[in-house]
Image (cartoon, rainbow, N blue to C red; front, side, top):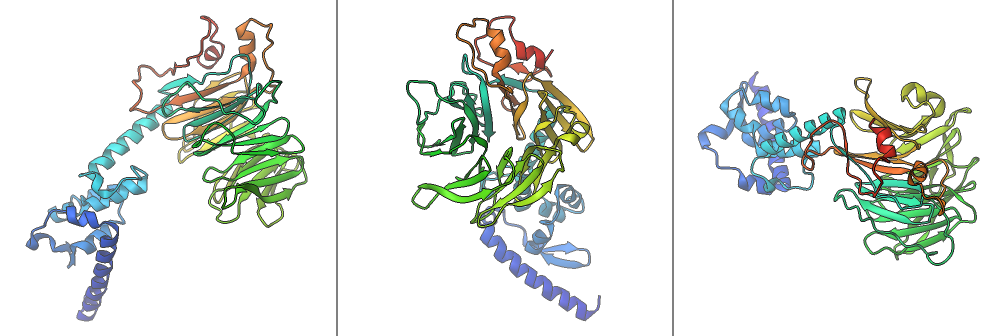
Length: 464
């Protein structure tokens, strides 16, 4: 390298050093205070091939390396080992991998060890998923009533029944005493069946067969904060997973509701479509104007506020059976392809995926877990009723099996198992290593339902 290039090289690195020091002081001021003092003759300048770079510049370079590359660099020399084990680098890796996202760099003294422990737990969880190693609980049903709809979000589960009752569980604490949410129509007389239910971290929503809609704030109590009446029965219901936006489909109209600055709920957008809507989802992270995606028989619509409905997809006679959306993509199942790819011969009714697996549910009641990287089915469980809801994260899975026909139990019928075949069920699987002591690969039933011995009908079907 000639003198000119060397001077230019040093000048650019001085600029990088100044930027790195400024950025470091802004982002991790506590890390600079916690780092032990280095010997001046050892770490002020770091050998980089035929150049000597300041320590802060070396850290700025190492931040682009992953954990394997940092391990290789740690074997080069003692100096590089000190840099490769810097707390800032491993704290950054933990944040990138999603480990302890709410923590600060000063919360732990060795972020490399924390990263290794989190990776080990993640590996065990993935192994438990693959081998169906965990426990399964059946959430307690309402006696004499059939399940009409279910939904979950981040461990919260909501269910609606033929009695008009709505219940909420928190599976994160395994609280089986699920509270009831009151409605505007509570009182003497027959209440309408629940058609759909939705839940997020702060709101619960239920739609009824008479077109009524109730919205509860889970933080304030069990009574509705808003009540809305549709002229006709609802075909679909959606609730945003991140804010207070609700979408409903009735007849050929789709409306989107949200509260204004004063907290009063109002119609934010209204659309007219050509066919009756079957599935409806709200797109996250859309900014000021709410956006939804709807399926109607063989069509998929994009519904954006202050714009008319646009057709995203036409199945040309092949109906769309399920729908899921993200900020940039929409995924849906088409019935004539479902049995080829998913193994549900009557059609896929619910599906979710992450970076390595797919969990699908079908009209035939079959829940299947797939490793799509290996193109292999890992395991499956079966219930009598169609799968209407699937939700999972790294350590748990929630499935809801809702009957085709919601028929309440005859009061004169005293044979429990006859009704059990028609009531539906919600199951919660737990794979977390820090909550369970595993003894076998067969899930254990932790239901608190008072059933007669010998009549575990669904359990026998699922795990013969």
